[in-house]
Every structure is written in C-alpha cells, then in structure tokens.
Length: 224
Image 1 (tube, rainbow, N blue to C red):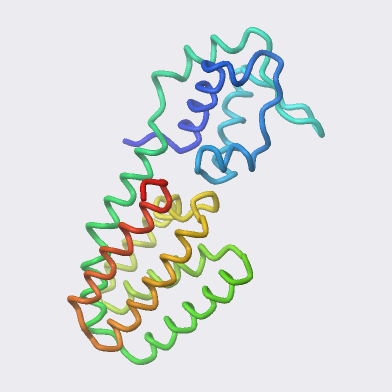
Image 2: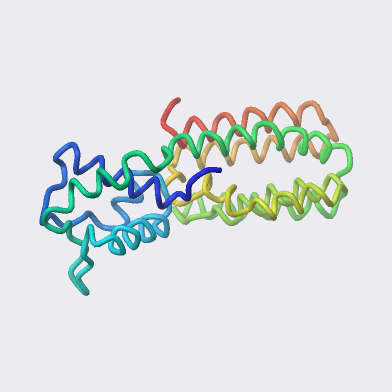
C-alpha cells in the first residue's frame, strides 16, 4: 500500500536537513514554497507539518511560522528516512494507471457519445481556455472533462470507478503540478479529443488520450 502523500513530504523535509539546507532553529519555508518544491498540494504540506509537530520535531508558532526544534534533526532522520515513499514514484504510479485505463475509455466514448454530452464537453473546454488565458486554476474543469468522457461510454462502471479514485487522480492535477506547459498541452489534447468524438473515431480518440496522458506526465514531472 502506498503511504499518504504527506508522509513523503515529511520525508523530503528530512532531506533538506540532511543536506544542511535546514538546521536547528531554522524557520521552515512557507506552505506554498514547500508545495512548489515537492510538487504536492498545500494540504499535503500542512499534514506533513502536523505530523512533525506531533512528534515534537518541529514547533508551530502562531503568527510566525514553523521552526525546527533544537536537537530534532537527527530524530527526524531516524524517524522518517526509512518510512516514506518517494512522491515522484507516487505521481508516476498515478500516470501509469491513467495510461492503462483512460485511452480505452476514450475509444469507447467516441463510439457511444451523444450530441448533448458533446455540447457539455465543448462548454467545459471553452471554460478551460478562458481560465488558462486569465491565469486561473482549472483542475476542476479538467476532472469534469474526463468524467464526461467516462459518462459518454454508456457504461456506469467507468464514471463510478473514476469517482471512487478521484482523490488519487486529483494528486496528478494538484495546483503545483499545473504548470503553463502542462495546461497548454491539456488544452490541445482536449480540442483534439472533441474532434475525435465528433467524428466518432475511436482509434483517434484512443491515440489522442494516450498521447495526452504521456504529455501531461512529462510536463508535470519535468522530464520533457
């Protein structure tokens, strides 16, 4: 079983201490800074800090921030270095799952999709483009689009499955992973998927979705 994301964050904070980047008495960077550094959500950072506070390894000072307690650095290393999964591996596993499941869903959707569903998808994609140009966050619309694709198959299991796995899937859409390059690639893919659905071209839909997931993985992990 994968460890919670916040545990991986706590582990990565220990690495900052090992490297000497953080030392006894130092103030931890802000939640936003840590989220961007570790490519996770701010809520995961918050939970990681809570776990460290609970173990008396760091101290949160109201209105000031969180500090590493004196003598705590070796304890952190001992407590966490062997316990937590690598966050990059977690994200990689999520994308591996998406690459297996979503292309087939898209192929089936292209065959079964109706006009009303297609209209809803077009509205979602247009709203995404508006938010992208305004520099606004749009992960909720991305999730809606993929949910509509699953609904379009006519098979109730697919949307139920995505709903059940939504918390895991959302980790690959978290704010720190939504860089400009990824968002642009997503928009292009969504427009190409709309074209495939209009044509009822299942093979095109499958290939576009495969490439879509690969592209956003590369953009999110910085491997492109």
